[in-house]
Image (cartoon, rainbow, N blue to C red; front, side, top):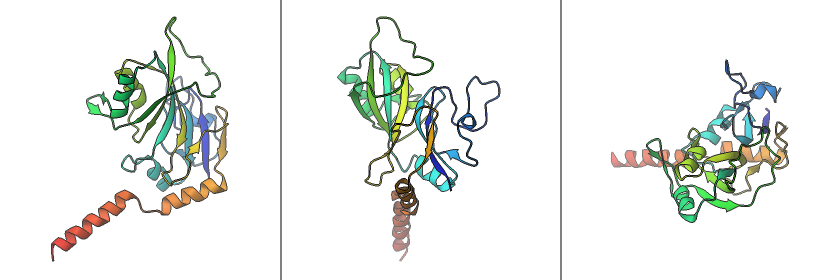
Amino acid sequence: MPTLLLHKPYGVISQFSPEPGSRWSCLSDLVSVPDVYPAGRLDADSEGLLLLTDRGRLQHRLTDPRLGHWRHYWVQVEGCPEPPALDRLRRGVTVRGERTLPARVTRIPPPPLPARDPPIRFRRHQPTDWLGIALRQGRNRQIRRMTAAVGHPTLRLVRHAIDLMDGEPPLVLGDLAPGCWRPVTPAETRRLERLLQAPSALSRSSRSGRRRRRGGLR
């Protein structure tokens, strides 16, 4: 059963069928493997690592927000955030009336990425900075709204890693060029199989709760 890692480029929506009237391309323009679907999404104007699979359970396991898989991003922002702004991002900010979960946020040097096509529109005399941001939730356009909330709009957003939370290094973008994909390696396949076989903390908590309730009836 195929599971693939794709470097989604700018201008491609995270689905295989085009949106009527949309200017964006879709995944079928890049991937001809049948019956695979993305485990998670990236907005059309975002780039980076997308896992495609034909296994519904794997999609669910990687995207259920209650299971909290860390996703790692390189984020180019307008301006140079000061420590108070970075602290706000780490603690969580209010986006559309809801507070985001705490995030991991660091200032980083420019990552080794190819130039974006089309190029980013910079404001003259306005510096930019790069942040490393890791999230355990994936609300709509969350990072863009978070950085805008602290006064530093996102200019470029690239997901570079997905953590399987198994104690091993995350799946990474590596040297995949934009628009290219590869099958997962045998070692990655074994890790994904173990992920499906392992009981989640959520299911363990549910079973524990049922046992406590049954015990209370004795």
